[in-house]
Length: 194
Image (tube, rainbow, N blue to C red; front, side):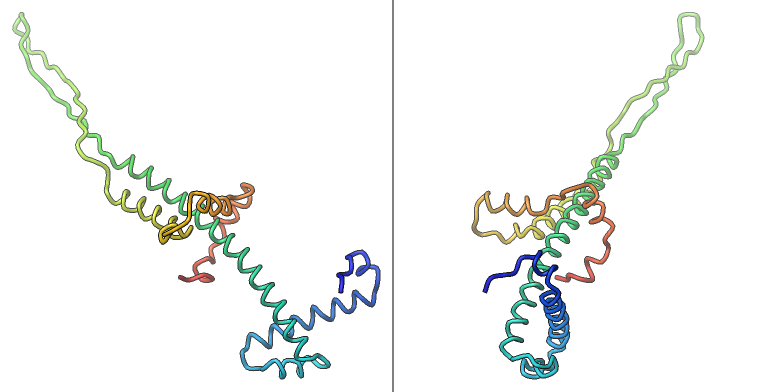
């Protein structure tokens, strides 16, 4: 059975009505199915004049729609989290650079000139006293680790550079607006828990 082109569906009220009824039925079937309380026979009975075979087809279609939606959501969340990790890592690098302490010593020296007057000479000497704060390096390594886990690169036992490149391309933002939307969306941890 071939699919009817959209122009014919919108132009034919009977087909449009059937499409609307199907959408309503799919919504009802999905709502009944997710409760886990009903068999396919019971769902068919509650939907009225629908066979068990039709409910099976509806559920197959519903599962496919859910899988596609979940796949898109996961890609969105991965992109958002990668962007967030990049921002955190950049801030950690700034903190690392700022944590290098430069101490300045001022030395004074008193001398007597040829006329017997005391002359005070001041000199400055820069001294690099300490290395950067290691807590920043720990955070940076944490960002790298999280990025690797998010991309599935930490458990990689096989696959080549092509596999890695394909995964990286999937998470690139199309626009600045998309990237900003990813940053602002704060419900990631409540939706997806590992």
